[in-house]
Length: 350
Image 1 (cartoon, rainbow, N blue to C red):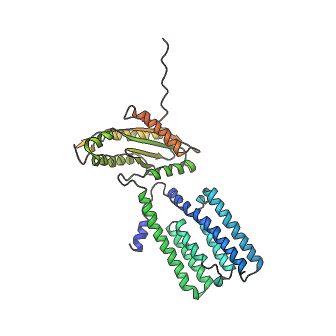
Image 2 (image 1 turned 60 degrees about the vertical axis):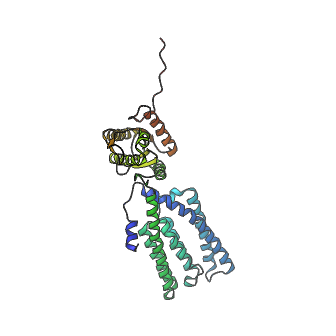
């Protein structure tokens, strides 16, 4: 695959919650980099004490002190308050760039023993930024290297740029493969992992309220038992298409397993969710499912349970509440239950 092909791959269409997923992946990288940054400062401190750089002692110790504060604060923020970094995704990368370039300049420029730190900086940027941003940072590191080392460092500066571009394009391929793996291979719906991750993100950051619907086919086991699993697979593919036709572009449809699906409706009250669920139920009621094997077609209905979550709710509790209402809907089949099932009334005394 050429560079153009990889770039096209990286620029494929976004999907609902793509930003949340990118942050999910970036946070893993940030946690690794937080520890590496501290190890780098420890190594730098030992090197400075063993062989002090040719610079003003006060500047040296101020730079060393700042590097410790920066590394420790960055680590604490990433490990304890990662939402701060999420709100400013470029800030950590820019601070690393400024710090690395200033550190090299203050410790001897082209003669600095920390010049290879620029290679480490450009290697980390593709893990933390989208494609265009990572390319820009790579170019910045290459220019900084050339400015520090002069004409004799041209080859190394070009190497910095090539490393940055190569890692950025490789990261685009990895992200594309990872994104594709979030889809259920059979139906094309999102997988369980992505659906629950996105629900947790919405409940933490909004927009609230968030309504979820648990969807289950009535009588699906009979299709598998009577006509075989290939016929059942065909029904599941048609199910996802029906559900997706009834929801908005930004809603999430995820397959939890078997014939059970999760529909996440951001910025939707329970009343709006019930309205969507009724549309889905009616669409299933009118649909004739064509089978690849067996008879020409079958008719199936669907049961749906809904629950509404707000700020402070958890994905586990919300899905459990929707599942309980789905259980109530399954007792009658072809029903939508959007509020807790009423308690049975005791018989009135005669």
